[in-house]
Image (cartoon, rainbow, N blue to C red; front, side):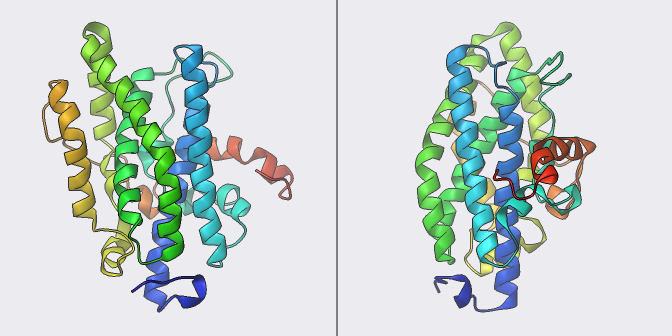
Length: 272
């Protein structure tokens, strides 16, 4: 069954599952794009500064697209959805809201490039898996959007995969720092992979594949890279700080939202 527009939604249960999925997709991209933007001027070299900025712009654009679908479904203005909601209303994974490292991007930033590479690479792989599944979503506007996003995502994934392999194969301090970053990311990555309390309904209603299938495909996509860099496989993921899909977050998200939404809160009519 294909649902072609908000007016064709067959049931309240279908809409609830769809909204839950869209909030996850939008909030994940929104907060990670912001964390990535904090690297502007701090990346390892000027070419990476340009490339990373482009990726963050794409990712924020994807968030905008998902918020637009939520607006069309009656959830409110997309600017409010992006900037006006409290941390407890957000459904992003906790891993994605974590700071890049000690300090502040305007004052003594001591960010961890290894953490940035691992977080973005593992996330890009999981996002690619979801987008591939969403191309067959029963909600046609979401399926069409996934096709558009997929083209840009290909380059994001290639970028972070290249960084990951190069740093892992560099040996010495680079590999040591990467191993620490991998451990840190995997400690929270189950929060990215989970579809939350409505995950089963999402699968039943063919909005997206089931969580178990998506997680397995994420592992399969990583396997060649893990093997080529002599990493143990499969990766063991957990969720130690809470479940962002349930609105559980760290104070780091409150701080990020305060910065992100400063202009909007001053003048809600301003365009973001």
